[in-house]
Image (cartoon, rainbow, N blue to C red):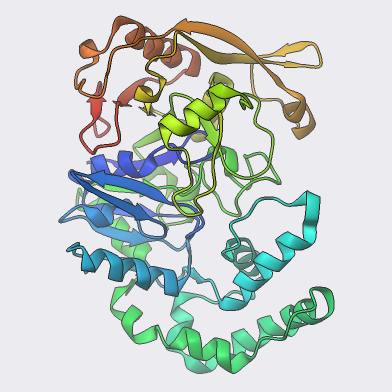
Length: 428
């Protein structure tokens, strides 16, 4: 049985939660390996809609063990609020495992995230202000606080004190905010320790033993390829590794254990926050995609920037992640559009560029080169076989497949859990 990595192939919000959830009934573990509560998944089960922010979407699949890996940064208040909300709705959350090596988001990093973003003014990155970036910065600066530190009060207070030496200087002298006390911070973190203790595990050992035993494990990325800290549109990116390689460092499994890498991609493109976006639409078509597609952030509620499908980005995601499959979502949103533009290349200062420009300046100046594909008017939300789709919808999918260089194995035709056309199994 395989280890499957599921990643976003654009700028996030592609529907990874739904794709992972579809696999969840057939898998034993679903692992979130990066990010925090700065991004969310919306999963529709029957008449119920679930908005998940920190938890892996496998939490909704009975019999599946959801796992928060060491590459995730954890806000304990958010974690327990989500768990309580799901419990109230009858979801069993008792199987959740949390890596002892995952870093915690202390309250002072939420404060620093908000004030530093405001301080940037016009140079803002567009963070969610939830302390994600400062916590990853602490991790790399080796002043972070990990889950395991909650169970040694002396060590915890030492680490909080060490971190606050510099941070209080920033808060007081740069941002004109009050200093944060060591005791108040440590006491708040310690208040979660006993409730968290039964969930804490050596996640690397658990997952490797599961794979040795023939279990199926899905690794679920937060954010997406174009927001990856190394391979995305830097500096307008997240602070973690959101590509397939991050599944290894963020969970403790080796690269040779991965069998399939599934990219999730919309039938058009969206992004949230600042940064270049070649196919962005500032007209009625952009508003139509936003309205029909319900393009508002699961976590922030912010309206998403919308544009046509970008095959250059899709090819880039395929290369960076070594994608074996694509899951195409929200095809139904395009119903009723007579001619659908698809970006096949860029024009950069009068020169055609077929692959991702090597530098950010060129990407910022890139203008889309479009090909137009015929649209369809028929309602496709009830289609469950590829042959059920209107001919032009089939041709659209096949054209995207050819342009993107990766087979499209699954097609989303509506928000419901079963509103999917499966062309190829993701587990074979």
